[in-house]
Image 1 (cartoon, rainbow, N blue to C red):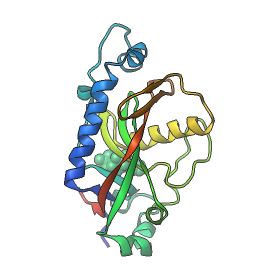
Image 2 (tube, rainbow, N blue to C red):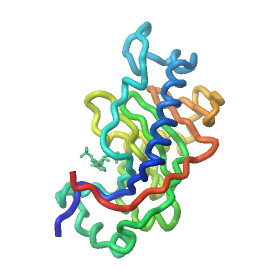
Image 3 (cartoon, rainbow, N blue to C red):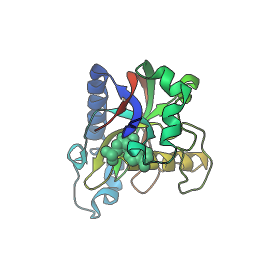
Image 4 (cartoon, helix red, strand yellow):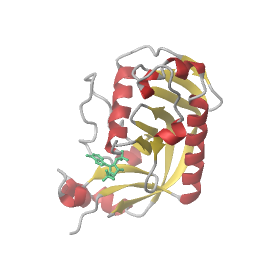
Amino acid sequence: MSLPLYFGWFLLSPVQNKVRCTSMDFLKTLDTLEAFKKYLTDFTGKPEKEVDLEQYFQAKGPLHCTTKFCNYGKAEGAKEYAENPAVKEFYSSVFELSLSALFVTPRTVGARVSLTEEQLLLWPADAETEVEPATSLPLGSRAHVTLGCAEGVEPVQTGLDLLQILALQQEGQQPETVEEMELGSLTYYGEGRWWLKLREPICSPACFSSFYG
Ligand code: A2P
C-alpha cells in the first residue's frame, strides 16, 4: 500500500477563496488596530517598526485541514490510520467543516475547525500533542486550516500554536485585550497570540482525501 504525505479535508474551491479573503480582511484590519500596535514588538522585535501582516505571512498549497500526517508511511501510526474502516468508508466524501475562529501568532495564521461527532471518527487519537501550559485538551482540539506561515516557519507549527492558545484558555487565562470587530470578538493572549472568535462560523464544504505531493 502506498501511503500519502497526509490525509485531510480539502476545502472546495469557492470556499477556499472566501476563507482566503476573510483571512486577508482580518490581517488588513488587525495591523491597523491600536491594540495590535501596542504589542507590535512581538512581531518586529523593534518598537518603531511597522508590520504589514498580509506580506508577513506566506501561504502555499491547497487549503486543507490535516487529519493524519503520514509522511509516506514513516510517521508513527500511519498504516493503522489508513486501515481504519472510517477512513476507508469516508474517503472522497464531502463534509461541512465549521471554521469557528481565526488566530494569529508571530509564526502562523490559521483557522480553528470545530469538528462534529462524525468528523471525529476520522481524527487520530494521538494528534493533541503536549504543549505549554500542560493540560489535557479534548480530541479534535488541534483541527485547523493553516492560512499562512512567517518566513522560515513550517506549517506543522500552526496546530501547535492553536493548541497553546486553547491550553491558555482552558487554564482560565484572562485575555489582555478584548475588541469587538465586524467579524467577531478579538482577544490577546500575550506573546503575539491573537484570537478572533467568529460571530458567524464559516461553513466550508471539504472533501476527505489525501495528498501525495
Ligand atoms: P498543517 O496541517 O498545520 O497545515 P509539509 O508541507 O510541511 O510537509 O506539511 C504538509 C502538511 O502536513 C501540512 O498541512 C502540515 O501542517 C502537516 N504536517 C506536517 N508535519 C506534521 C506533523 N508532524 N504533524 C501533523 N501535521 C503535520
